[in-house]
Image 1: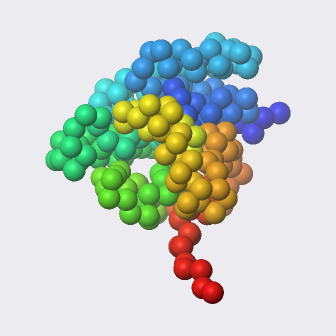
Image 2 (image 1 turned 90 degrees about the vertical axis):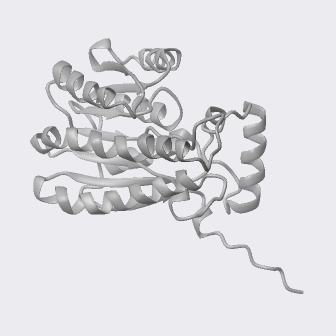
Image 3 (image 1 turned 90 degrees about the horizontal axis):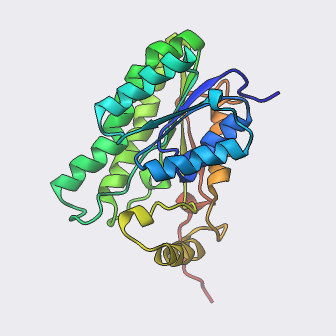
Length: 263
């Protein structure tokens, strides 16, 4: 008996990384899962992974498209309800640090990052509310430790994640009377392809993560996508009296403040 038997869950950005691990874990816990991503090749990998875990085709729906396009959000809701008849959990996981190949501090990048990381989350949440109200469902937003730790190399990303955290708090008050919980997971440095999407090679990105985690993460390692997925599962299932909360799974990163060593 799984924690999500008979439930239906949308996980955006689930063609790789944290989203993929979450979709697989939710399916293993009994949910029908809606897998979303931009790349047909990556989506196929997630589909194959689900099938290798014994998840039947009847419990899998694939929706391809860029999340900043309203049509993709519309498709996620409409196709979910058309195939499964309901929605129980929405995981807003899709996100990006910036658009590769342009000035990261340009207004073009500002608009892109806000459209992907924040506007799409608000729009998809609004679409999901009537369906979640029927099932007493819940929402899990995937933010970042960057929401409270400033980073001059990813200013717009950090800004969107700070806004997402406060969106969760505001919507918890809007949705409580509807019986809908909404919470946020704030991952720290996690072993995904996040940096590769920004143009780094896998080797360079691993070197970067190793350098960062050894210097400013008290636990001295990356988190894994699977570790983040278990935290998302907790928020979606066992955290029945939690709403408007931010849970940090970051190895102590946001609390770290280096101090000089005195003789």
